[in-house]
Image (cartoon, rainbow, N blue to C red):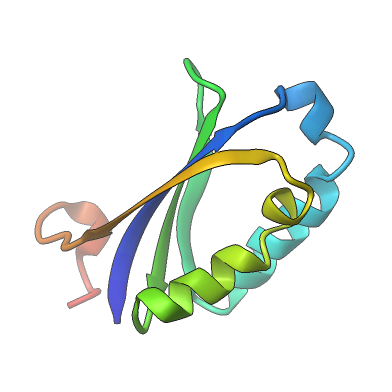
Length: 96
């Protein structure tokens, strides 16, 4: 399994995203329960969100991202994906 850090840059403000937010939150909850989403939240200073996923490979991650309700609604202006190899810190204890 690989870990990916994903940054969504939104093209609408938080208030406009609210109409799709329940679907977005439900999708993230499902991904969390499946073990695919490790962490997620907004970057307070920007109109962006940061998400950390675990997926078999980039193709599996792309399938997850394609089902994101914000993406389906056209709310994401840009997506930055980076594979990450966390190696230290309390967050990874027990993950190796």
